[in-house]
Length: 302
Image 1 (cartoon, rainbow, N blue to C red):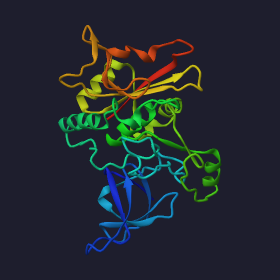
Image 2: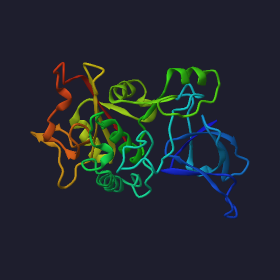
Image 3: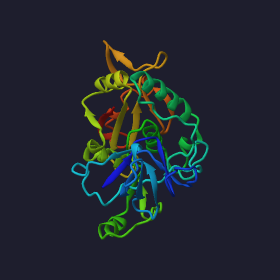
Image 4: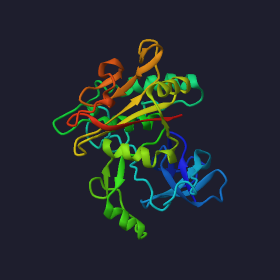
């Protein structure tokens, strides 16, 4: 049976910590999946991190059962690296890993009020406008990395990595495949993310929304997470993805006749904004064959 980490992170220990004599082997990130080996001890279960050789004990109450009737192909685990200190806001090193900074808050899902307050703290702390991690350079822009980080800390899942075809072939044969960036796994770029939302996101709790007015209302009312994902006409050019965020006293969506026309968003890209609405208007509706987008979709997660 497979279980998923239901807390911001979970310690994998060599033995159950009955007498404070255990050693932490790994910090398992939120939403990472483990395979159950033994649960003879009611509070501490022995598990294995899939696609690694790591085994140990975790606190059972911090796991949730994976419904394998919904999530098929259960033996091929979604590739995820553990958070790493080298992955940081002031560096572009190892951006394919979750940020290993324990001072960055996670979304507090205790109540709507706590969700809204903690989302503001996440946006302020990630500080996409200024953090070096997200600044464009000669190689690329980094909308996908910022969106992944935002979703990671708000406790909703989007993929950062995908297995290569060769890795999938080996996994289907039952082989253990190590996570090696650019060898066995490659990044999910924004055009791929557009396809992932349409094909797979519902399995992870995402709901497609008809328009930006409805999306902004849901994000505001529930303290949830909104996404606008747009796919390019020319697929070898970067698509774009942004998060739609709750309005604050000072940061607002743009409305006409009471209806949201440009939602309140946060993004990395050619220009980075902690918050914006009117500055880029309805960028997702740009149909210029060279610079625009063939299609755009709106998604929400509570």
